[in-house]
Length: 343
Image 1: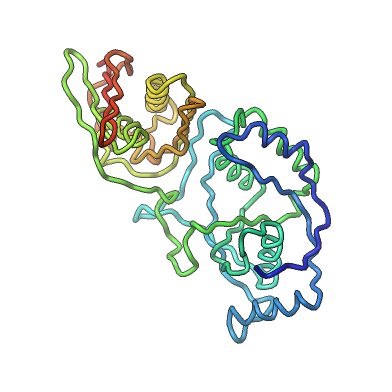
Image 2 (image 1 turned 30 degrees about the horizontal axis):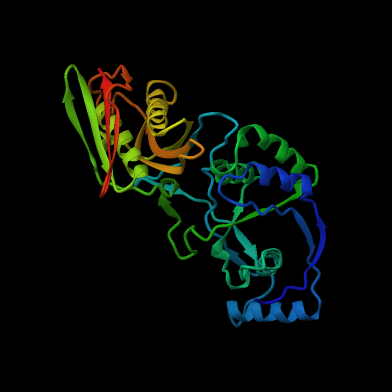
């Protein structure tokens, strides 16, 4: 790695703050950094900056602008237990992503600071398209909240305290915020991408079976997570025609339970409640983000839209998800799930 000569000025992430993350981490370790650096270049830094400009092009100048990756502005705000996140869509069904730029000199400072802070990564090999600019401090909070939530016990109740500690040392109104976004599109990609990068998967692994006066959902998957996702889609497919559903916004659910069946029952009921009340949500796709049977915790995100009687078919009314005859079967080639809906 290229050794950065940037000077560390202050480390504001006190041991107390780091201890909070250590105590509440779920199956991971948090590396908490809140540091300030001097961006004054000495001779060695100037040499590396010259090499950096040459790597961009023969005529690259310090104040030339480069495109950043589109900002991810759909991170949910976990101050509410449920959150519907709007997305602006084009006629083709994509999402308009605003593009920010960054000066070559500031990009160099950014990569130097990151390389110094995280010695296990060589950020000097990155491109501007590996970074995005966050529109506001609130967007930073929402993005971090979404990534931290599945791995931090009781994060909902502690996050406010953590952010207040951070805001004690950051004047957010005077800051420009950047994020590392390697999984976002490169600068040569089109400005329009699918809504929230929704990972559409049209594979159907479920069916509806007759069950006395009720209906039984039968779903299967290569693993338990896929089976949970498929049986949830099976429930919504019984309520309406999912082929008519567009991914207009994302919606998030999290549940806790003592065992697989309890978690599944609560999971389905959370989605059923989202359909029967605000925002009257129906998904095009559901993805389980976090699944931990030991801690009895599960979090998922879905992409879809609100039910519209002028657009969506209203099939037979479902009264409730039942625990009756619910089965989760572990087979050699995956899992099968059976759930009865009261109609």
